[in-house]
Length: 98
Image (cartoon, rainbow, N blue to C red; front, side, top):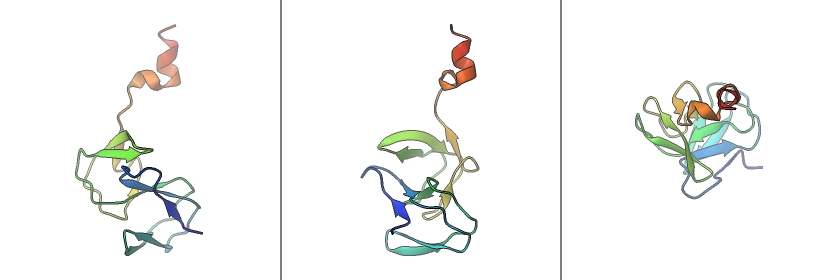
């Protein structure tokens, strides 16, 4: 079973199709990378180099922005990206408008 999937041809992230322990090898565009930490199903890996401020694309749509440079094969999560969604998308914020 392949450990990553590209959900849309315009995405710049690969999504893990299974949980992987630290030390697992993954292939990204013909290069092999070793995961330094364990990652769960659904976590994102950079499919290419991203610069600070670049949009993170998943499902063909932007889901956030890089807060630092991210190398191809690197884990993408809250430590190096921020959500671009407005606060009104959260449950708590939505309640104040009713």
